Amino acid sequence: MKTPRTSQRILAVLAASAAMALLLAACGGADDPVDDAGETVDAAEPDDPDDDADGSESDAEAAPTAGGDLVVDTSFGHQTADPHRDGTQESRRVFVLAYDTLTTFTSADVSEPQPGVATSWSANDDATEWTFELREGVRFADGTEMTVEDVVFSLNRFKNIQGPFSFFLDGITIEPGDGNSVVLTSEETNVALPFFVSYPKMAIVPAEQVRAAGGTDAEDAVETDGAESWFEEQGSVGTGPYQIEVWSTTGQLEYARNDQYWGEPANFDRIVLVDAEPQTQLLNVQTDRTDLAVDLTVDQLGAIDPAGLQINEDVSPIVFYAFLNLDPDSSEISSNADFREAVRYALDYDAIGELFGDGAEQACGLIPTMVLGALDADECVSQDLDRAQAALERSGISDPSITMEYISDFATDGISHGTVSERIQEQLREVGIEVELRSSPLATQLDRYRSNTIPMHFWSISMRHPDVSSYVVALSDGGGNAAPAGLTADSLPEAQELADQILSATSDEEREPLVQEWQRVLNEQGPYIPLFQSARVLVGAEDLVGLESHPLYVIDLRNVGRS
Image 1 (cartoon, one colour):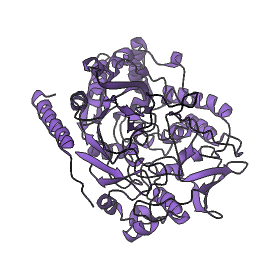
Image 2 (cartoon, rainbow, N blue to C red):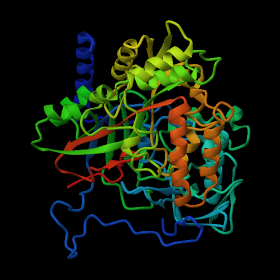
Image 3 (cartoon, rainbow, N blue to C red):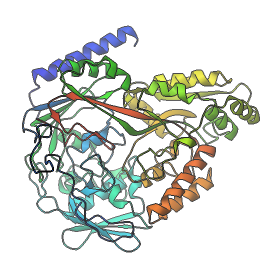
Image 4 (tube, rainbow, N blue to C red):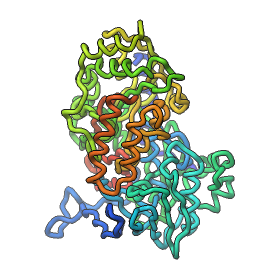
């Protein structure tokens, strides 16, 4: 794999990051999408930000210049260079730069999918069969032309490798269609499939090369695929605007412009992502060591001199929550319904909200405010110590004690998992519940999380794709968030029945009340305790254009340029 020369500016960033780490240690511190009825409809053309009403170009929205480097400070969370295997939310902004998917979202408006390598799509009457027409002339970074076989292979490999989110394609077969098309057939009605296939982990890869490296899309791929190390050696093998030249899960990740890209040329020659703590990000962006910081907290804004910078504040779609495992084999305490009620009403949500800062919103359920079926603010839980004490007495548990786990080395939207966990520990102690905190680094904690044995955990759920079905699938029987919390169809049948109705509904009018009732059941009986929807802060150099928070990618660096 080619390793480009690292610029002096990037070396300065790494030096500053290392220095700050030592200081902290010392201190302890789409042309034709389809509507709900399955009819083909015209795609809305994205607004052109470069055009004023009179057709002229404003100074503030001038087209970006091409070339140069973009240096971005962020918190790394990605685990592998193989897009079909990585289950972390942070990897989406990593892979979306280098790989294409059938559909995508080209702006912060995520109400309808836009064309990716598919230019149009249509469904039969009951939305069980979807045909995606593919774009002509798409090439991988090595110049190889993308084919129908590549798309079929990629989606089947994503499904059969049984990664953390392969369940999105459960019950779906992927086959070549007529001409330059692929057909996805679902066992059940699936109006959200064009949203599903926008997921950056469903990246289109070159079938021939991946097979030669030991990869397979066969049904036993989870046991027989051996291409993961090849992806790390290659960096990336996609059709996106950039290609990964230096791969790393720590330190820095480097991209170069992909000259084979089918769309408009990328705005930068190189993009460098640097792994940095929020405190380091704050220092670097103010001293021009980096162009952009994406993991600052709202509280840090008070320390920023805005001269020469631009600041973007928005509500994040990430919902933070705690869960109490429903499986008695994991914990007789967390699986006690009265104990879970006691915890839910013992928490002081206002005090927890102080840790999230201005701009954050209490989560009334696990569906964020910008997604269909979000609960209104008047349905949020408030602290009720009398109810908590009564529930604790009904539980029959004397001197209750429980272990709560969290990630020790990672901040999501600038939020420290440890700080919030400690606040929860303090509040539960006030009602007689002792919480033993246990932390580990992200990689270790992911393995622990997926073992489905943790009694209590502080976690978050991000937007995999903007259709509400992604949340319903993830948070219900067999889903990636449900299994660690011990939630099955048998443990909470009322919630599962509502989930099944949501997934089989064919219109938003039918789905919305079902989604709301499903959340109410989860809030009353389920394992999840919704806490807060965080604020999101982006701080960048004043000459950057396209500095906009994105619900899926935090920021879509495909759109960022320099004026």
